Length: 110
Image (cartoon, rainbow, N blue to C red; front, side, top):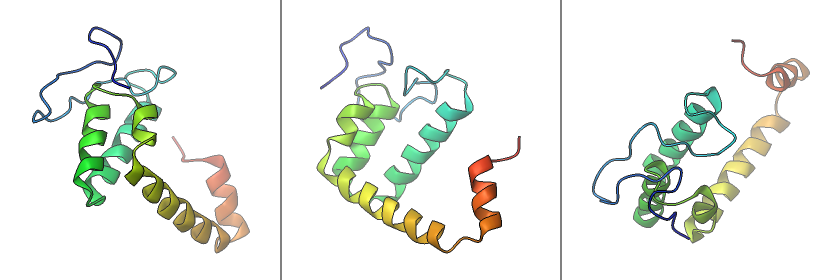
């Protein structure tokens, strides 16, 4: 599903244009929030590391506001990215000490 022109989060329609940095990805995140920055950076890392041109383009579309996160999650390549990421996180967490797990639960110091 494509976001209609003029709707919140829409951006440029030229797919050759790099995405702007100020598109609000989630309605619950403020445009300048830490969550917004973290989500944008995570999507950029996935885009830059995926090796799947269609998935990279779909991520650019989300970052530019041309489509939604929901649409991105429906992309076939996204399932394998999420599976790999989840497996890697599970492996990493299973090897953490109790102290490391406690720090992880508390989150980063501000």
